[in-house]
Length: 218
Picture 1 (tube, one colour):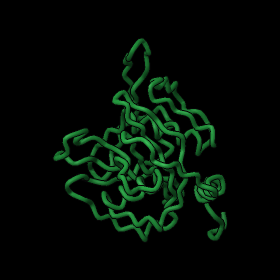
Picture 2: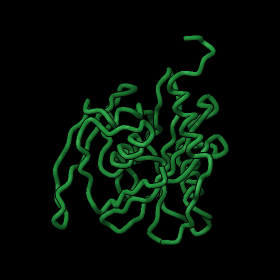
Picture 3: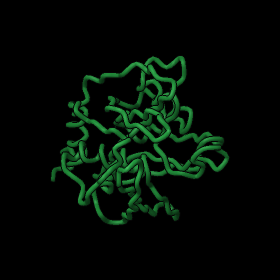
């Protein structure tokens, strides 16, 4: 391949960008509302997603792997603003570096609405992570396509209000550390990876009904 030709991964990101060229932010109307940023970038002809490990100091989900994001503030105009503000606060990601658009929200058993915001970081070199130690213990990058593969994946069947579903666990070893990506974070990544790569995962997702996932926009 010509060294000046765009890589397959870059072409895929360009295609995503075109499909997301008209973002449709939703007004943050509910108090129990959050937004998370699924930030993708290309490196060595592969697409990666930015993930964090939450600080052990936090009162909820301490030590869990998560996407940058958090609860809606009163001053947030929409879900995109929430996701980008939280990413800047948590890992120092400049909002102007990211092209974004929103997906339809997920719900949780705690009645929290979680809105995935997909972002593309075109210039990874311009991003110099600055971690908020009160919220984030570490940052790492996972190959995005891994969430469609059966490798390094475990599952656990559970039941809620008569609905039997599966929680997926993905194990990733990087920088001499092992991270476990699971629960809602894994569910969001499985769903968005399916849309980005336009194919079903190599396993049966069987996600819980209460997540109420709906990606009709894509």
